[in-house]
Image (cartoon, rainbow, N blue to C red; front, side, top):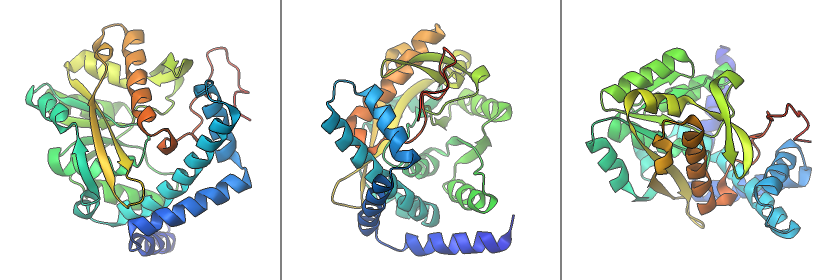
Length: 296
């Protein structure tokens, strides 16, 4: 790692982190409007995703949702500097309300381990400090491509008290061991996996390559599952952390039923704040028919 690059990047992030979150959101919204005007890959991918996921919307409704999602993309980008450079305690202070805590508490009390599924909705980085400080959770971590950025993110997540494990076989084994001990693990369930680690299941009615890791962990441990997301409170710099029980179908021994239920749970979370979802991600890149031209 280039130490100069690290210090410059870390210094820039620390500078941003001292700006109040409420002002960062104003700046992030402006950044999102610029991204919208540039009409680059992020906007084009968002337009395609929203078009196929919300066919019931007319063109104006779809366009409005795309623009709002681009604004939240800009907000997320600036919020990341804040959450990575502030203490876990400071980050938790931005969570004004936790709804559904009873679902997580009840699942933990069963002693079979708990899988927390956190879609890329709102700002998922605020969930880590909550799980780390309260439950010493085991979280998967995929290194960033830039070494300097990777160190910043890794140090921030490790500082929460969570145990970080890699997104490979050894990481899955570490999560399995944590669950067998009755622990809490966190998984981001809405990223496209390698073909050998996924199966196609409906997501907004579209066959989507879906990770089978959660199904495998459930099959081996009998753990419980909850959904969680940190939703922005409009007009503030704060969040509400929402915890919901997963669809019962996720516990099915049939992989197709389980994956469909997991995706249905993700959809339900998204519908609570669709403008705050990561629509710029190419979620439908690999098609079951081999079509490689889904996106522009």
